[in-house]
Length: 207
Image (cartoon, rainbow, N blue to C red):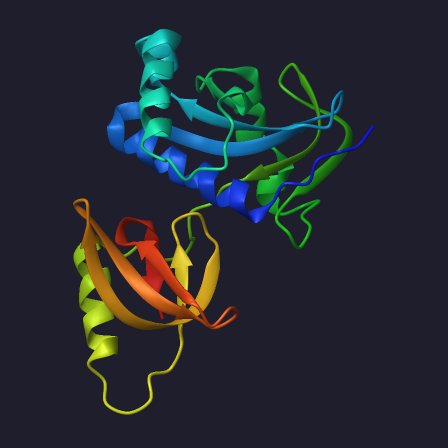
């Protein structure tokens, strides 16, 4: 049986969907991917209190609305699952020793042969983590930092940008734009040397 690999686009789009769902009233808690042992497929799990308070119909209606607002997303609707905080799978993921960094691999995926989360047989999972040790920058903080960096004279050094999902990249800030009521920060990515546009709301820090 072929086992799927969790790719960067799925990780990025999964977090973007979770943030849109939370913004729309979904009340996101833990967000994670899990690969089933039986068929080797990855599924995105969003833990939301709305599932238990208002019911799954209301929760999934919010989810589908959020997904429609992500037209460029690589996610497939049938690969997204909503569960409540008291779901055994949600409880297991919160208490798992992975939070103490055991079993962690460089790509952020935890491999667990012959293991389970709640009632599901899984062999790997990925947990989104917000940056630890500092308070994420506010919308105004990001805007001010970008303007300060762009106003410097001489060659502009690269900055380390940390996103709300904990991932990072290095790039040179070169602009801020507003499109469809969404403010974006623009960087020249060090690795690709191409422009990279990031919604300001997704930025946790710029250093």
